[in-house]
Amino acid sequence: MISSGSMTKKEFKTHDEMIRDSVKGKNRQVGGNHYMNFVIMPIEYISKNKLDFLEGNIIKYVSRHRHKNGAEDIKKIIHYAELILELQYGEK
Image 1: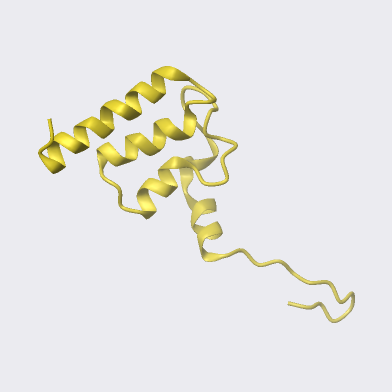
Image 2 (image 1 turned 90 degrees about the vertical axis):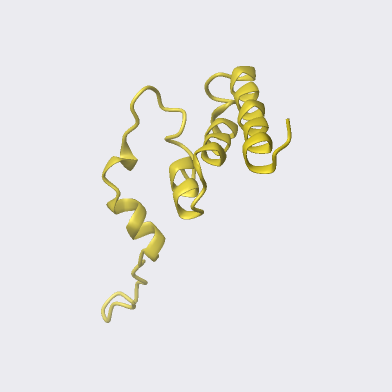
């Protein structure tokens, strides 16, 4: 939108930005701050893509491993991937 006096352009938020801004808990994190600086928080990605519990945990741990638990988080990713192979694809 252009203002008639100053010819400045008014910025409008996208639908996703408005939804993200309206989520009550998105501006706080309990138990650390390892997600707060992400452009897309893992919970947003998981929710919008309708990922299940196992897939969501993989996203969560792969997103945070550099900022929180390092190799332990990578081991959790492997564990959840193995669970997917076993439970969804019958591989042991």
